[in-house]
Length: 142
Length: 142
View 1 (cartoon, rainbow over the protein chains, first blue to last red):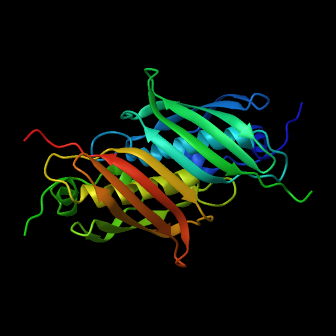
View 2 (view 1 turned 180 degrees about the vertical axis):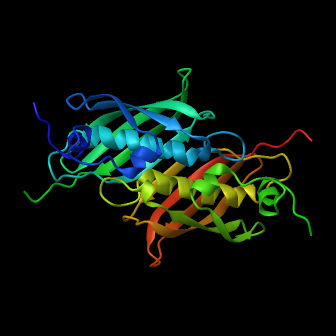
View 3 (view 1 turned 90 degrees about the horizontal axis):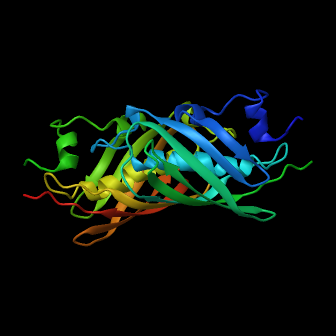
């Protein structure tokens, strides 16, 4: 089966991975478009550290944006897009460099809007940050 | 006059700049701790691009976190810190690679908490994203 749309074009090698994903060490673990869920692994380098030896919260926000967004983008058709309009992140505890896993889900998908939620978990299974996001679904003219 | 505290230790060369700031191309434009305001320039590289040729929103969130946070950190004394607990970003329009300027301000500073707000402006003076944040003020034992 060939899946189409912007997410699958990258996953199946028909489009280049976005630079932002490479910068974050984005790596798909699992995706289920029917359930609206996704799991993504990231690699946080020392280049993301704040003055206190933890990953700067903004980079955790970037990882969460790149978890919640793809949960929705994986359900889009060819030419569609879903820019994030709102992102709210709560930073629960410090995160260290290394592997972090994002889990994202579509809470509700309307015709023109997607409501998304998820969390970022460290190597010990502790949730380091949680997020919600709203995305605007834009369909191609076709 | 020698200013002290974690912000000034970096600004005056007594501590290394945090890696996250270097990754974002962080460059101080102006700071006024008495007024609680700051202005910071960033350089967004192509490594931050999303599949649609715009800066991935999460990296704009990282820039805003590194604008709002320092507005508060510039007012802290030696050994104090102010980790962000909440960050909410609205993405108003796409941002392109290049120079972006963040403006941050302390909306209210309590004893143990800081309420922060700001925006990110592109080279044409358009606001590309706005943010609010809450930070927890932690004082050194001394």
